[in-house]
Length: 339
Image (cartoon, rainbow, N blue to C red; front, side):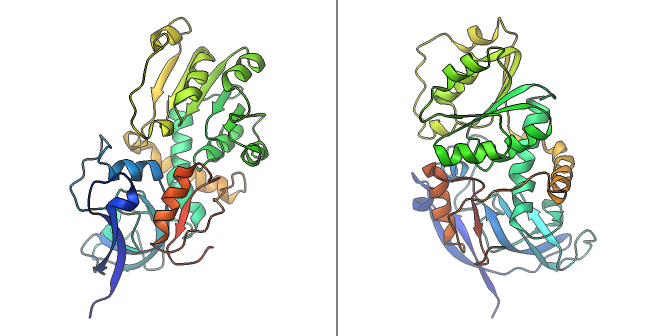
């Protein structure tokens, strides 16, 4: 009798990831030529993407049901196919390919995996979310030493890495977060000012305390925070759009004020979309530098406090991220233990 493993498969279009998905059992496949098989130990959660996939609302990913799910996972190589020389049994391997995340095992081309120093949650976060943060700041934001940068959702999985990297790059960092605990956390990462959007007006604080404006702003929230960042850009400022969490329900935008052209024209400012999947040539260099920074103790990875255990824990992890209560990177420990 062949061994089996479990994975989460989207079976139907539905309003939520939980409603559309099922845990299925699959035979454990031997790797073919050029392939490896990885036993996943941890997977990273991207709750907004997962929800939109369940709704078939991701324009750049065309799904055919049923489809496997999840993007990020790290584990150990347990079998190697013919012709593979870059991996050996026991190596740590991470993948950031869609359908490779929410599964206990993954067999696929070796080219879809990269080596990590160890099969730890930290290297999973750095190889996925960390790469996004570094590439967004350097390639899209073009952040320079001495510039002022504002970061929304600064206590989140992406945000807390953006803050640390911007500090290391010599920028003046403003974080935006909600609530005392999150704001204290962001301050501990080196942000010189943390705006609590639950008790402060983001736009008013920026206008009063940073009259020179923002050289760079990175927003993943949209709505009022996007508007505040846009209104407070400096001359030649760059507003990087990395997501729109507040628009998850897909409600149409009602334009009640001047359009964006009026906000950027006279400042020579720009609004730039950040789509990490379009920047793959920069991933390997970013990943190597992030691993080095972590090894040197110059960057830390914070994980959310809620434990998410086993493949069943993915559903609760997705909902935790969507709740807005998480702080740090949300991961699932597929093997049933933290490390």
